[in-house]
Length: 89
Image (cartoon, rainbow, N blue to C red; front, side, top):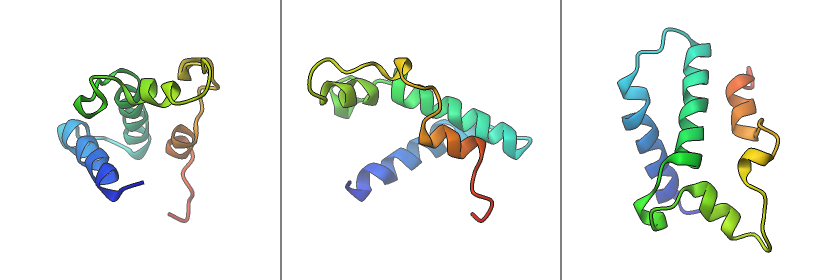
């Protein structure tokens, strides 16, 4: 994956979420960031994706009619990390 996409993602996270809120605690920050990533991937339309969500683009690349993300287990790797981060990090 090209680094420019990751840099753009983190810019969006910081400008649309982190800089606008003053989290009172780490658990609150984790909850709010998990909610933001759900919004970013499931509801936020992206100009660079022809006004589609990342979720729509991902599932449209799979052969056949893949399930929507909402029909899969709700705890993906990112959400699991936000809930239970590695204590070493």
